[in-house]
Image (tube, rainbow, N blue to C red; front, side, top):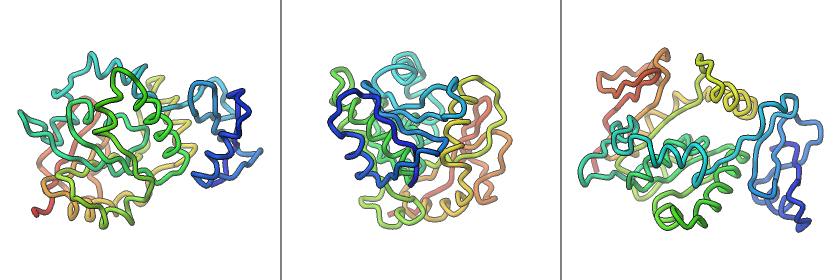
Length: 250
């Protein structure tokens, strides 16, 4: 994949070249999207809109730390949707990991989550966030146990995943109507890189074959059900639905 690669780390140790080789990234000086190695982390920038700033994954600090400490925990909609209750903490495959927010919420309440991400730049951002998270004194111990990354396309990988999870979680990219500053910033940068998931409808059937209990699909409240498959079972929040479909029992 072609992207502008920028090393601002000051280390001079060739780390960016190693990273590019690992994720099969090719430097393109004219690309409007830049993957930047800073002294602190790896981040994605939209070069023609510098005011948007950089997008990076931070499991240990920032918004994710605030959500972990002060959010709803087990009461969060995504936790309810996957079925967290009492001692039941399902194993989850997040087949459209993105920046890993929902996967982190599930890991924080005790679920083991395998994240799948096919875009190599997004996978590199996730891997960087995991590496720093694993090293964090406060969350590193349980994060290593509960949150892992697989760089692969869910369309081709779901059929081969073992052991089977109880839940498959899907949150395919869908055009957002919301105008909040955070959504505008992240979605503009993110969609410039990956675009909408035009093949997302193809995920529902293999996800249902893989999950032993249920498939959960996050949708904006104005979006039709994935693959036009309606379900009466959903967790509804302001702005979103978590549509729930039965999986295939073992």
